[in-house]
Image 1 (tube, rainbow, N blue to C red):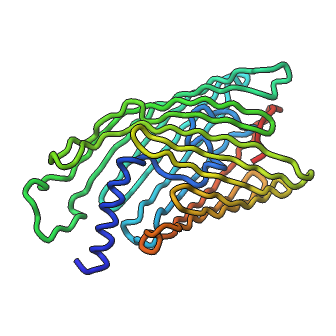
Image 2: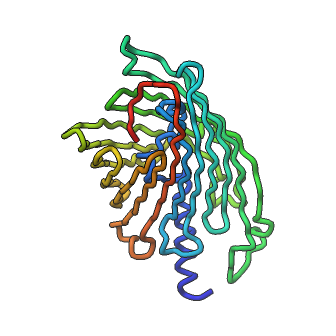
Image 3: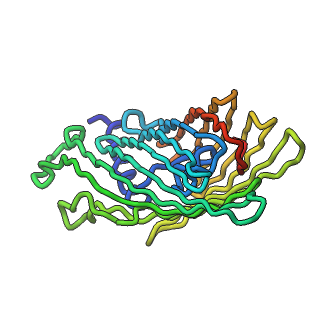
Length: 308
């Protein structure tokens, strides 16, 4: 194993260590696909959004850079009181990968006579397949206790959420990995079991109309786990003519995210680039995320919170 591979492998081990504290895929495009972080969002749009997200984390790591692909769809039913949705997630980090399928249900409550403010309560069930291919790991001095390290395990889990939304604001709360399932017991007392931990998300924002064709949307996302540090994103989007946006996110994990998006009819294309500003950024820098969405028209005339 040459020096570069050694460095990459050390960084991979560091990444695996981080997975214990931040196990869910990281997104920058939750600004355009908040259903990815809250099942209660299902059915809250004035259209049926079908969206594909492709993210490469720390692209400078090359072949072991974490890659996340997400395909999501949701829609309202029963006079907008019920929302249904589904997400398929594929996540790959070197020799480790996971494939998950999520089904979501949401119930929407009308809060005023004008029906311009609603509260949605949602839940989802998730089944994830975890895979580790030990053949992709290289050791100078193999240890017998690591023999047979490869495994495949199916693990069920669940999420819940609440989503308060109106014409120009939203407040989102969600909790994930409620079961805290163990998908692989430790092979050594030195390491802890591979157990899923609960994740909590709080997301809030509003849209301010500066002019009829110029809007500003500040928002914040707070992420927390049990017995772990709280992280947050502070975001601002500038929306022009309701068809183009650009923006910036500042993350407490020491990164800056540049955002941009374009709406062409029912087609939505978004891109984000994460630039690390920590001491590790020279070795593991640059994260790209592309989102391609198709907003299937809802022939019914319905109220809604968002233009995008």
